[in-house]
Length: 365
Ligand SMILES: Cc1ncc(COP(=O)(O)O)c(C=O)c1O
Image (tube, rainbow, N blue to C red):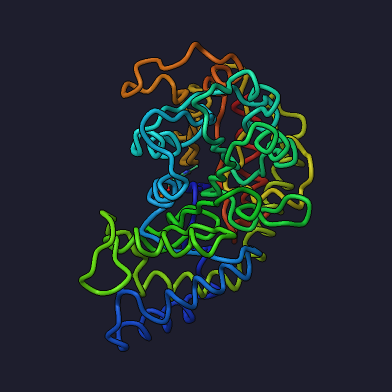
C-alpha cells in the first residue's frame, strides 16, 4: 500500500546523513553549545546566500517577527497591514508587540496579499506592511515596494516558508526593511528543532537584534534593555550549515515534484497552483483548491494512508483571540474552505507523485 507522509525527513536527509552526524558530533565534542563559532559561521553563510548585508539568528521564526517589529519601533497604537491567510505567528507577532493587525484580502491565484487593496486600508496609525511569501511563492514585491515607499511605510517580509525563493533574481528577505525566516523542521531550510533568522541591510538594526536576543546585553552581565533569551544554539547552527550547502538542490527538487503534480493532475477538477515563474517558487507547500467536498476528499486520502493538510482552515481575523477583527474578506474565506496541501519534500520520487495523483483522481471522480 502506498503510504505518504506530508514530509519524509528520512528521504530528505539520507544523502547527507553522514555529514549531519559529523556536524552534531563536532559540536558535542567542542563543549561550546551557545553563541559559538557555528552560529557565527551560519549567520555569515546565510547572509551571503540570501544577498543580505546582515543575518542575525534567533530561537524561532516567531521570535524573528517579534524582534523585527520591535527594532522597527512598532508597538502600542500602531497598525500593521497584513494577510489573513498565514500561520497564526504572523498575526501573533503584531499582537505581541501591542500593535493592531489590519487585514487585507489575498489574491485568488497566488494566495498572497493583494497589493491593490492596501492603499484603502492605510490610516494615520499605519506603520508597516507585514507580507508573507506564502507556501514559498514570493509576494508581489515590486508593487509592495512602490506602495510602502509612497506612503512612508516599512515593508517587513515573513519569509518563513520561502528560504531561497527569489523575485527578479534577488532572494526574498533582501527587499524590505527586514526579513524573517523560520527553521521549523518542515520549512525549506528545515532544522532539527526550532530556529529563526532575521536579515537586514542595517548595521545598527543587526546590532540591536543581537542585543535584544541576548537579554538586552552586548557585554556579559551588563543589560541595556529588557530583551529576550532567543538564541539559535550551536547544534542547530552546525546542522543547518550542512543543509544550507544543498538548499538550491532541495528547492529544485520541490519544484520538480510540483511539476509532476501539475502534469499528473492536469485533468483533475482542482485549481492547481498558478504556473507563474516556476524558477522563483520554492514550494514549501503544494496547495490546491478543491472546489467541492474538500473535507470528504481529505478523509478519503487519509483512509488510503496519504497525508494532506488544510493550511489554513480559518482566516486569521476569525481566530478566537481576535474575536472577528475584520469583516469577512471574500477571497480568503473561499480559499480557507477549499485549500488542501499535498505531500511535498526533497527526495519525493516521480513514481510516488504519480501513484498519489492517480488515487486522488479516483477519489475526485
Ligand atoms: C508564515 C509563517 N510565519 C511564521 C512562522 C513561525 O515560525 P516558527 O514556527 O519557527 O516560530 C511560521 C511557521 O511555523 C510560518 O509558516
